[in-house]
Image (cartoon, rainbow, N blue to C red):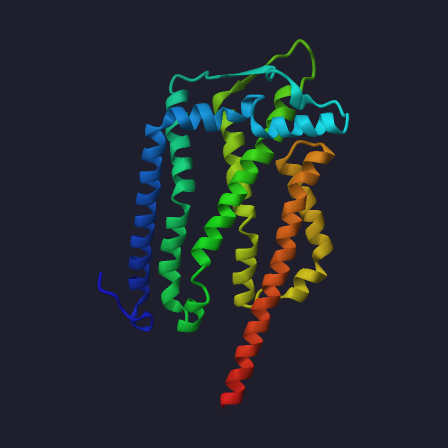
Length: 277
């Protein structure tokens, strides 16, 4: 499709352009999914079932911290008192397919963001494009940090709590494969998206929906929301909620600074335009 100036493109041209960017993004996800499907032994035995082993790095670190401060902890056991089972005929095949797709989305995320950037960048001024060249790198970096945080922090805390929770000795934990994978998937992807908060605030400030004053004014409400979010995605114990809430609060503070910088730059540009006139 020949390139057109953004102001010459019709609505249908924009839709056609968007369609091709979505197709390219889908192809990127499929390529990542095929790679994950081929290396299924590594994906499942090392990544997916890694947090089920007490040798997982997070458990080892928390066990050492507990011993250091002389606190009894469940992170120092030999193995978890539950098994993972499959009760559906196509359960393992479905788990293989959808886990591969999830890994494909994670692997292809920078390319997806690149396609998004290619779609919206023609509508930006040359100066705006110049100052936003790090968009893909920063967005991808925040996403991957969030995914790692979800995998190495939220997932093991959740598995340790929920996998050892018992209402009675008469009930044994036999966790369904789909439920186990869903926990890991939701923890990793949700954290990846939450860590995009500074990027979201940046664009909301650019279009005038958010200001630094607004973020400061409602900081207390944001704190409550963060604590509720931490309570939802973590086990119901105070230590886990604090561990999750602290980085989110730091991201909120960073977002306030980013919003402040954006507003300051916009005011400077407006002042320069008035001086030129």
